[in-house]
Length: 356
Image (cartoon, rainbow, N blue to C red; front, side, top):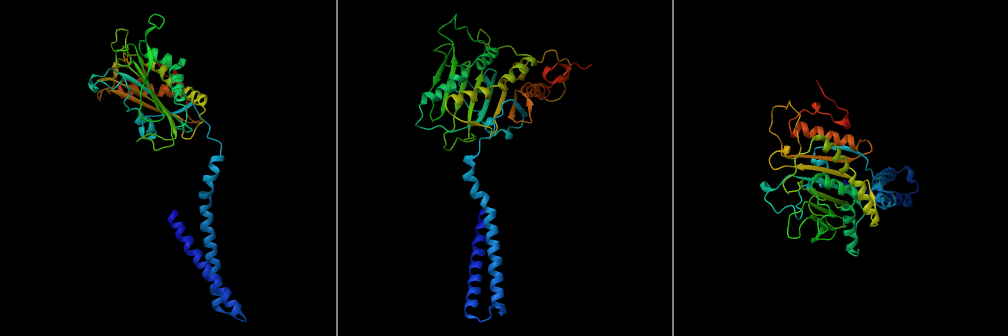
């Protein structure tokens, strides 16, 4: 479209110049130029071409002015309390890619040998960092997140974490090296000799350069990966639906925590693109290893159970409150991943009760 507009402006501009020049020449040498058909024709062609030239230029004017005005516009308001739920990953591509990123301490086993795990991903638009920044400032963003009471509570609800007052030497968050600017990794370990982590946290900050494939270079991304375990290190027992109905709304509070930490570091956040949250439950063979469908005596016959459940939440003023959006994912997970009829349980956030 831009090339076509340029061609039109070049043609009409040249034609307008020639037409008006011809009319001026005829008027200069002729005694009664108005009576000359060539004068009239040249004038009409010149004026019409000039009008077309101006129209083409005016149509391009917004495209020329907008880049100059964009920096003056206030950033889009950040929304972190209402959500649109979807299972379609193409609506949240950066979150979908982040769901597959290998994190330190969690990817040292073969896929079939890995215990069940849960992953939370948050993306949020924010200003860029610079190579001149103090790297410690970037670590402080992640450390502020992983030590936040909300994150601390989510980890403890999912996996056994030894009491540091009893075992002061562990658990602890351990920094891991990374290979590019703006990427910070830490793992929660219980033994310096044990390479596997019970939880892993990953932060990516926008740098202004070309982002890796699938990432959104306008956004900060946080990944929290947790392996539910019991005190003896074995996989934790599956949790009932109402547990997930309580935990997922907590995950939808992570964007607010991330925004606070980014602000402390002097980074500006905005709602364009909107904040997004991804929640993934992954089992080795059957999602019932994580979600306990006990009490649902009338399973829906048909497909085999899935090994995973993934939900995406996109911030939107017209969306649902966190608990309602989370309840939708729980029902969706029961129905499509575990082949259970969610009507036979009570999902408080949706007001669904027992059906006879």
